[in-house]
Length: 346
Image (cartoon, rainbow, N blue to C red; front, side):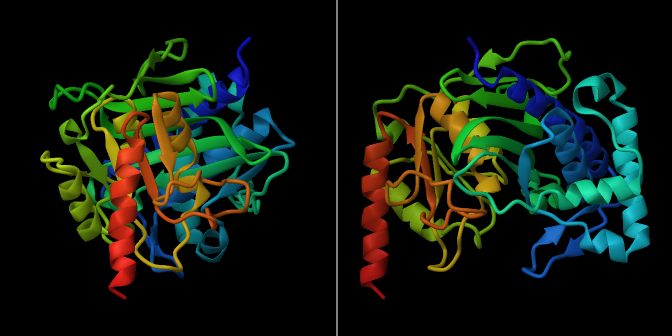
């Protein structure tokens, strides 16, 4: 018996529809960027994708709640931006009417804004809670690089299923000129899969697995592009200490999780840049499960399990390390050594 099969399908369909919207903005000249209070950017695509995904989730599971990154305050104050977002959302729904029986539709701009605001759950360790990042890697999205639409279901604080759409990721990494757009999905205990975003709705995903490495020096690493999100200098020291000689690949968003899950790379390092920063649950929920089900281990930088049961952030954790099961302990030892060295120098 397959657990959460319906939830996994809804997650896939929601991310697929949202990707129609984000991809249209990605290839346009108008990104409609707004700067939030924390100085991070949000685009019209973030708002539109959030409304689409939350609408899909609540159509299928009306009693569930969502932890989403955005709210509709800006749209309620700015009619021009609201109209831009509504036109995007309406078109994405119209272009995917075959999905409406499963994930519904959005009737007007007011409903769209109400759906965006339904991402206001504070999370926690009880019940069914979806973690949503409508565009993970907004800066990558703006510069024309990698980004992802990320959705995961947590039950009583544990991530159990979800989907990760990477519209700009190569379907076949060995063919740089080939098609782009990959949809990953995963269920705890049932493995991780991928398929092209453009594949038919009935297409089955292909199982993905991490590389079965036993020698850490043969590994390759990936890390975030933004220095404010992860300490590149410390990560370089760790890579050198491990004897890894392949250059690190820098990539935005949870596309990193998808990439190492399917064997494009092996180790993902995200070291804390400050004592106060807390990782958001929507930035890691589905990616963490995707890597674990593909044969990896994901912890914080000190080897502690990531705890999604506390609230909207991973407040009990610092940093993230993902690696194949056979190499994770070796990587954590090097990471802890670097962090202890840095702490001693303070």
